[in-house]
Image 1: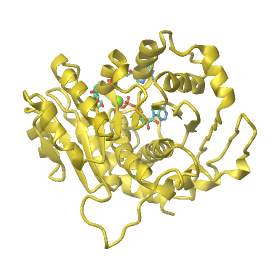
Image 2: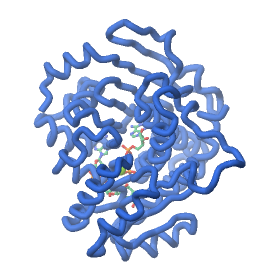
Image 3: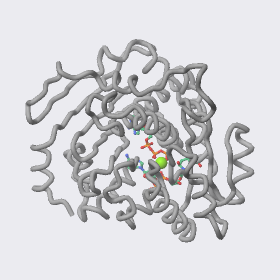
Image 4: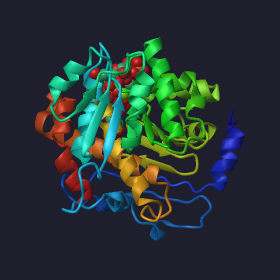
Length: 347
Ligand SMILES: NC(=O)C1=CN([C@@H]2O[C@H](COP(=O)(O)OP(=O)(O)OC[C@H]3O[C@@H](n4cnc5c(N)ncnc54)[C@H](O)[C@@H]3O)[C@@H](O)[C@H]2O)[C@@H](O)CC1
Ligand SMILES: Nc1ncnc2c1ncn2[C@@H]1O[C@H](COP(=O)(O)OP(=O)(O)OP(=O)(O)O)[C@@H](O)[C@H]1O
Ligand SMILES: [Mg+2]
């Protein structure tokens, strides 16, 4: 367990960067106002030394060319979808495709599968999660997947969670990057060892999920006065697993650096926005790891990917809200993924 003093010492030694992206004109260049505040506690670098985080996200985006084959820009899996929840895995999987993945798989329970298939012919849906050989059924796809998003709409059934434990163990053994969200985080709060020290894991907790994880891992309630330190401490305690704490501002840390994303979103808090984020992150994590640290200017590729997914989700929310106001739903946000991506990363 990390103590507050230990965390404080690590902060002092580490390069801590807080990047706040203030609002900028819709469809306008994002560089104008993205870097509101940046500092390195060891003073070795200054704001002028650094490219903006948006530029780093742009650096990891693979070019669209006629030379590629299907699958090269991303084959993403989503583990989730049960009797109660079919929307969440759909949102995550379709978001991965809309961001630019070539293939998007959903591994769900038998009864959720026809429902999810009926939402979209573009998803590949495997009704395997409640089968007796579920771990092997998912495991045989792992060599063909670039990242696995675990948890959207998974539910908390004990048998399903123990299957997912097995899937996480196999994924880790195969070095497959995992993005853990929603009920996947419920499992991690009970068994943090599953991802302890795994450098290709990213956790994307909302407010409640973050509190649950912090209490389970650090043993004390979250210090709401210092969100950055709270995220830094949790990441450190988990062995530098990347943590993305969603909220009014998204705080991202790998236990060494802290990024903050306050890209303007909207005041609509409809369900499913986090699923858009975790699905998008699946693709961006693959792209970032492929690009490597030389393209991210020494920053952790996972931090850059997370910043990209957070800013994209919030921009989708902003654009959808401008069109639909109070009636905005996640489906409206998904329709904005293309334009939002272009306005943030391709201008
Ligand atoms: N259409 C769907 O199928 C959807 C299914 N979902 C699934 O629903 C399941 C449960 O997810 P939940 O997110 O409800 O998880 P939890 O059961 O942990 O609930 C989180 C709770 O925290 C509350 N909360 C969120 N932000 C807060 C804040 N800033 N301050 C105080 N309270 C806050 C929310 O109201 C919610 O009740 C997951 O499997 C998830 O993926 C959601 O993703 C939403 C969409
Ligand atoms: N108060 C807020 N203001 C602006 N954006 C927010 C706010 N709270 C959350 N968001 C944004 O909404 C997105 C989803 O975060 P949220 O906390 O709703 O996740 P979630 O509860 O997991 O969602 P889901 O319903 O998909 O499970 C993130 O991009 C986050 O930045
Ligand atoms: Mg969620």
